[in-house]
Length: 345
Image 1 (cartoon, one colour):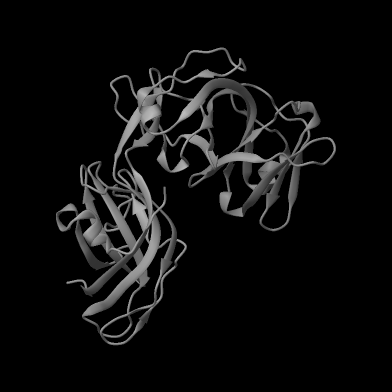
Image 2 (spheres, rainbow, N blue to C red; image 1 turned 90 degrees about the vertical axis):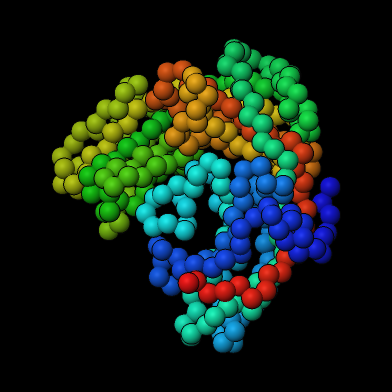
């Protein structure tokens, strides 16, 4: 149930449940100002997700109007995310959680923000329970009921299954800055959608789901920034990366490699509250969270809920998949107001 509250967030969670709000100059962007509220693990009212945020105009005590990107303000910073209060890539500790407003830094001399106010839909409170995703089951068999007490407590009634997905992985190395994009087309010129991509300093990788399509009927087009298009009609289909040969790649200063793979995907479907879904994580044999970003998706319309997570090809031995659910959390529409937030010291 979603309830309209007109209480300040400070009154909702209690003064002892948080530190802040306080302001600081953003260490990564000189023109930005951050307003931060800190939460510790176990705090009553722990925030999990902010949606549909609205922000009222703000002014400093000098009368200057502050601008904010309302699409990303405020936002939740979760454990393991980049800590916006630190420069570089320092991660937020596992026992900490933040709500952050990112504002334009005032240009005039100022001592405080007179008023920070607005509203948002906040999922908060309760506790995350991590549920082991069962690894047994024949691929593409009929889904079976997923029995788990925490799923029931969180309001889910799901059936689970596993399926195989045929994929093509395409990797480009070399002059990545001169590269624009890949497209993959079938014999009728219809483009196949990319499912995920990753980029590093000198490489770019993209994954495509093939469905029932065969490699011999597909064409990869490599689009360069200068408008050049390089086609691959005979796609190597080995399970390990194989380089696409030809003098045109050397001339362009790039190397393209491809590999085909049949990956497993765990999925679940049924009924449940999407606001109580806390995504996936991979853990090692000792239960420690692995530094793997799960390729997952989820959707919820009304009471209907579906979710799926693909298994990485290079998964470490002994790794296990868990899905998180929020038990006892509430999703409510909140109006908040903070007065006289001091300038950074």
